[in-house]
Amino acid sequence: MSSGLGALAAPDPAPTPATSIRASGSDRRISYWLKNQTSQNYGDFLSELFVAAFTAGADEPEAGTPVAPYEVIHLIGSVINWHHISNALSHTSFGPGVPLAYWGCGMRDRGTIDPQILARCAFHGVRGPLTRTGLGLPEETVIGDPGLLLPLLHTPRPHILAGRALCIPHFHEPLNDAQLLKKTGADAILRPNLPPDPEACLDMIDAIAGAGFVLAGALHAAITAAAYGVPFAYLQTGFLDVPFKWADFAASAGFPVQFEKTVAKGGRLYETKIRPNLRLPRLEPILRVAPLHVPRDILERASAQDAARR
Image (cartoon, rainbow, N blue to C red):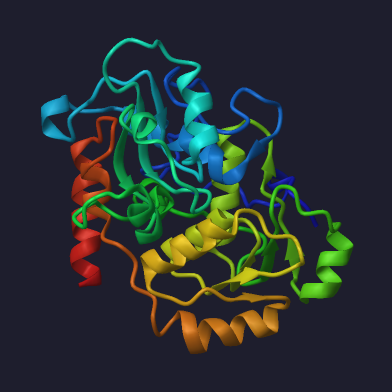
């Protein structure tokens, strides 16, 4: 079973605060991998859900977070290294100021970045402490991947795969679905390769949030599972994209970095090493440093969820 999630989902129930996320047109400043392409990657395409949620019925700016003027804004992803920043700068003017903004993003590796290039960037929080250290940011820098905010934006709907063990490989995973099913022992394979439709993204969230277990080769599948309280583990198939990002998120949430080949081993790992140590970052601070205006009602939901966790 692969990505065509629309055919697997149950009919929509009564509207929830997030089912209004439908618009596919993006703020032109928002940049992410595969933007405007016919195939999207789940984690990167979450950018569109954030834009839609923050602009749908938004209140006055002073009632939420401030809005800062940038030419290019990255709302999520492993997009911080010399090559990616240089490429982003090539799409901006070269006048004075800080044209690039990164919100809760992560470094791709431990490589150094020229301070003059970093000076053109504003870091509105980072994914994890490894990125914070790598960029030389102060200890008070907010930590947390924006994917953790999804429960504030979308109430999951019933899904045909509810309670099942899912394997969600990387966008470029070379093994096919049949091979992955055999190797992992999962009940279903869901690919993060999606059409450019926010509904497909929401459907993926529904599948993950309703799963019994998620073996994730796509980092934002693991982050989404963690956000919704679904047991998860990192997937090992022999193909690993950007090792740094997996360690960075794990460090932000307090659990050790370990990859497993099967659902059975991943489940044991979750119970013995992930669940006992899992401490997700607070949500309201992540929203407070966003480079876009965040409506007051979303901030209030974040505050309430943080209080409930404490």
